[in-house]
Image (cartoon, rainbow, N blue to C red; front, top):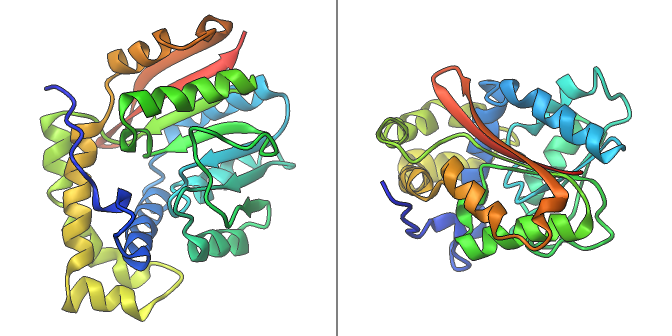
Length: 256
């Protein structure tokens, strides 16, 4: 199945910010509660070791993904860990909530472009559930920017372009309906646009299916790497690991 870059509501500038935030809040809640990223902790540890400092700069953070749970695990080995959340459309309420739960988090209120990260943002770069939002040229710019800055980068996708992954996404509205009352910070609008006017479960369904269709395969990730300028100055590791019923794809680049 070839990669199909259909539109996602979350990417559209005209899409209401509060609805986008409800969607990223749902993804954050699901990622943390299911401990989705438990198998990739060794990958993060490898990236932190390559960087030499205990700072993570998370790009395209959405609502923070599974980093809140991962943080509790990483702190056991790296008590001085600092995680900086950034996004092109920053979900400020989710960022603030995450920092309230774990003071070692920081966040940037202004828009940060993963393709051109400011030099002032120094750290081991990560991306969770977001590379598929970028077309190949832009995805390659993200990797090139990390190479140019001589900083390690790790990218994780918790879906793949396959029939089972797409079928799993068809059940996402049910997950939204079941989890919404427990998502924090609590917002009455979240209930309104989930149960009375069900925009959130419907757009999560569409964006979830499209996310699977957009996801880069390991071979396509390798092609992105092969097209980098001075990409050979990095070690590149790509693989897929099981996480319960899910598969997590990852790409790790570290300076040689």
